[in-house]
Image (cartoon, rainbow over all chains, first blue to last red; front, side, top):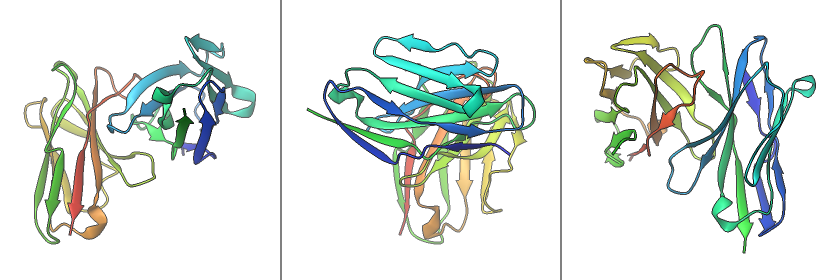
Length: 115
Length: 114
């Protein structure tokens, strides 16, 4: 069975602070894919990043960075110098190579950036 | 537009009524998913289509829920004898290959059963 845990329900930061959103996953598959999605108030889920289980390189995209650590089954997401537009609910998700071809989501972390 | 389109954006219905929710995926995407999102929760899988056929309907909560995709493009999620517990946002997503690639989501249909 697959499971994604996002222990932080809500986080508030002041603009320009850095913030890290935690994600811990569980799967018995050796080949799997991890995702982060952003859900702004408009409601549409926006894809941010995909990582496969064989690629543990950290990734940086502008103010966003991701830290994938198989040893701790974690795929954390850091926003540097947060902005008000970053306010949204962020979801971590998992899919596996064998079996069910669908995406398992965590419960999300609501980030509020205070100006 | 080029994105996933869902109609209606909002639907209010009375308990016991029948509703249909429509999803128009990105052109050429063979994989189509329905998810349900309750307040404060992550999306929960309902059903997955590959082409015209339902490849996995294990997430449908009971036999009041049914979905079709007769021509491999537009899909309709049908809910019979609606209950108040069915109130949620119903999300549709599509992809060219399935959930191992990024899914493209629509804005969802907010269903309220009174």
